[in-house]
Every structure is written in structure tokens, then in C-alpha cells.
Amino acid sequence: MPTITQVSTGSRSHRIPSLTCDPTISIWTHTHTAIHNNIGRLTDFAMQGGTVALSRHPRWLTILQQAFGHHTIVLEARSDDKTVGLLPLAEVSSWLFGRFLVSLPYLNSNGVIAVSPFAETALVERAAQIADELGVRYLELRHERPIELAALNGAMTGKVHMRLPLPATQEELWKSLDAKVRNQVRKGEKHRLDVQWGREDVLDAFYDVLSENMRDLGTPVYGRNLFECIIRSFPQDTEFCIVRSAKKPIAAALLLHGKGITEVPTASSLRGYNHTCANMLMYHHLINRSISRGQSIFDFGRSTLDGGTYRFKKQWGALPHSAIWQYRTRGGAIGEMRPDNPRYERIIRLWQRMPIRLTRIIGPYIVRGIP
Image (cartoon, rainbow, N blue to C red):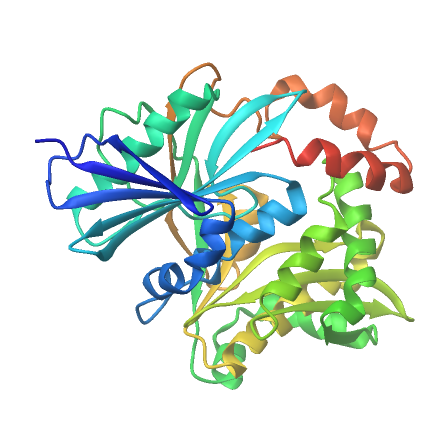
């Protein structure tokens, strides 16, 4: 006898069959106001455990709705009226690139959270069904370990998460650093750079640095409202770090403080100030900030194995952890939308010559449609 899947859209619900082999499991598909109405229960499940990244919080679905206009979904597996699994999804759509179903855009890691293989299977199979129903180019699940299912027919494994186990004190961190790293941090201090912490009061400074750096990289910049939504959604657990030279912001980063782990999903520094080692000074403060909050892990984000950013993070003592993004492809090649795709080389060069003010206008409309 097939399991029944509950579909909750706003205040309405209807039923469709599911393919899971455990008859006790049902899948609820929450959208629109139903996400808000169930946020407490969903959050309790997603954030349980000793070490949980803030990027796992279901409130990101609301952020993606508000900042990008994405249609968002939460698949919830229940057994005996108890939550046993979650899978958040966002439909990324643009006239330029097409449509994708992603868990979740902007964040480096997400995908299925489940207490059993049966719940895991039911969630992924339902996500695959939704991808087929929507006719998206592919379903992308940003996992850290593989899920072996026929519904998933592709994977990207060329990148790794770089994570630093944190010592108990800032003094222990300093002693653990290589002499070259310590010298670069001291060089930043000798340039009399100021380090400032803040939230909405320093958002403009953060966005100034981000916009210029992304233009120089040839990459469309996220809209300012994304970071405003993040800061307002997590008032106790997010903050910006700004490094200034003679009052000018020259490096900036966003920190997400989860349970036992701090992530830095976005960080930038201006090329013209590389000689000041502002980026090294900033990361030293970012890591120390995490230690001061009693965190046990600092997550630098994803990097290509043995690439430039990988080596930068490795010098701090960060270790590689698996980043296995799994796919159900329907009409799009894996990696087609990534910035390192050779087909975008000419566009990148053109973007690098554009005025920053223009990239701030055009960039957010482009990047919201990139998974």
C-alpha cells in the first residue's frame, strides 16, 4: 500500500501518492504561508544537535523569497505525526538561464536532513517528482555525503568545505599559526587599519567593498537587500566585519554564528589594498570572534581542491571536508552555470570593465537567476 503525501499550500491541503517503501512515513509539502505557520516545528527539528550551522535554519526560505522572489518549498517527512526529515527547496527562475530547483541557492551546504534512510529516500524522491512536475532543467541538492538513489543521476565533487577546528583561546590560535601568517597579520596592524563590527549600521560599507570586488572578479553582485534580509532575520547570530584604511572600507565579511560553528559565506577585499594585508588581518579577527563566542569550528566556505582560495584557507589550519552536490538532470549540464565555465570568459572580461554603479543595478537581476 503506497504512503500518502500531504501537500500543504497556505491554508489548504490535498493528497498525492508517494514512492517511499516505509508505510509509516508521509511527506508534507509546505509552501507560501504554510512555511511561516510551521516554522517553529521545522526549526526545532533542523537545528537540533550539538553543532549545527546557521545555514540549516528554515528561515532561509523566507530570506530567499524576500530577497530574490524565489518560490520556496519545504518537504517534511513525518512518522506517527513526528517530524523525521526535512528538505528545503527554492525554485530559481530567469528568462536568461531557465528554471532550477535548488537546496539552497547562496548557501554552500544544505539538502536533506533525516533521521533514517527511509525518510531520506522519501524526501529525495518527492523532490525529484516536483522537479519533473515543474519541468526545471535540474534538481540540485547541496549535500556533504552522497545519497545513493536512482533519482539522482549526477554529482559535482571538485570542491571541498574548508573548516578549522578552533582552540579554546585566541592565544592558542596565535601560537598555532605559521610564522608567515603571523607576519602578514602584523603587517596589517602596522598599516593602522581599523576593524569594526556592526550590522545594519555598516551594511553600506560592506556592500561598497563587495560590489567593487565582485566587479573586479567579473561576477554579478548580489542585491543589497539580500544582506539586509539576512541581518534582520537573525539579529543575534549575524554580523559584518569591516576593515578600514583612513576611514575607507577596504575589506568586509559576513559572519553566520550557528550552534558551535561560525560560517563566512561572503567575504571581499579590494585589490588596490593587497599590500596592506587587510584580508589577513580581517580573517584573524573573524576567527578570533568565533573563539570569543565559544565556537568549536570556523567554516571558511567552499574551495576548489588545491586552488588559490584553498591554499589561503589551508594556511590558517583549515581542513578539507566533502562537498557533494547531487543532481537530477533533466535538460541542463552540471556546472553549466558556474563562473569557471570557459564559455563565460568573454562576458567576465566585459563585466570587469563596467562601472561599479551599473553592476549594482544589473547584477542582482542576473545573479538571482543563477543557481
